[in-house]
Length: 84
Image 1 (tube, rainbow, N blue to C red):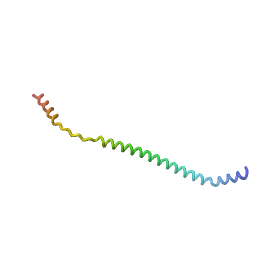
Image 2: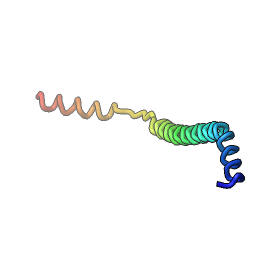
Image 3: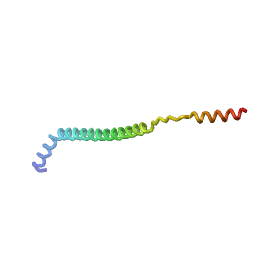
Image 4: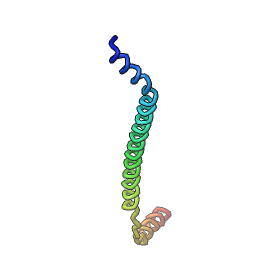
């Protein structure tokens, strides 16, 4: 090997540990960012689904008032006719 290659190898070997640490830190930060993005995406989907379900339940609840006195009179008339 030429002296130039040897010097380059020694310099590369000297700075290798700091370069590896830097790469490791960048990798961990990148993975943390992707995990955060995925968690936000899943949370957004869950919140949207929850909001749609709540809106649907709110629109389903309807109170209906009905006068059943005519029906009650008719049924009581039928039962009194069959008793005679």
